[in-house]
Image 1: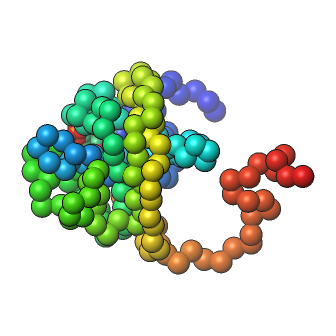
Image 2 (image 1 turned 90 degrees about the vertical axis):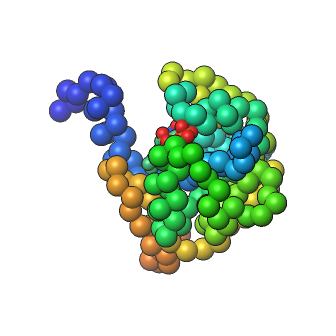
Length: 177
Ligand SMILES: Cc1cc2nc3c(=O)[nH]c(=O)nc-3n(C[C@H](O)[C@H](O)[C@H](O)COP(=O)(O)O)c2cc1C
């Protein structure tokens, strides 16, 4: 029965049923490399290559990251401690495993990196959507860090075999000749 209101509590609980990966979005602040744990990350466009991250307007990163290039670091299961740390708005980010000399800063050993230049921002309620144009990227294989029902969960690798999809993941069936 659909009888619940979208109060903040209900909305959080409902949305927590959607499993996600976990990223740290990193950028160069005046005090050095900095990062914020973000799971509101999604692909937007392949041409041009655009992704978005949604940052709470009340977060410190919201203003600090404005108009700066940033890296989306997709975390591995073993990087849960980094996810927890970057979700606590600490003062010291210097001990994190930053790749030396990288601009914008990125985390060594992440499962994937997307280096983004600011493309558009869209105000959306108490968040702002930061759309980034992907300039370069890399990725590896291995366990990913997931988030489900407000808990960190492992997303194990390798993935059990399964039947192929009926069409290319990023191709609309209607696009085919
Ligand atoms: C798993 C997880 C996912 C999160 N996703 C987001 C997100 O998508 N956007 C956001 O603004 N905050 C998100 N947060 C909260 C921020 O990481 C947290 O508020 C952080 O302290 C903000 O840091 P800052 O204020 O130093 O920028 C998430 C936290 C966790 C634990």
